[in-house]
Length: 86
Image (cartoon, rainbow, N blue to C red; front, top):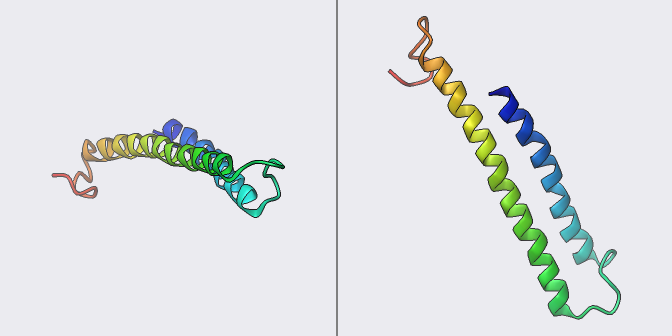
């Protein structure tokens, strides 16, 4: 459970780099010189799509971790009703 969360945190952190790359390209500081707008737009969409897939990947690990956390609480003998499952 903690391992799944520990995996999702670096994924979320590295996923921010995709947004930073988009901001640098839009700002014009890291755009290749002499590129036409179609290539720049394609590069922007690549980084935005990578960001979207990174969020989905992190959500999978977070969801699996919370599922295991819920499962461990629902099987606990002292407080089975705390998590909302009867």
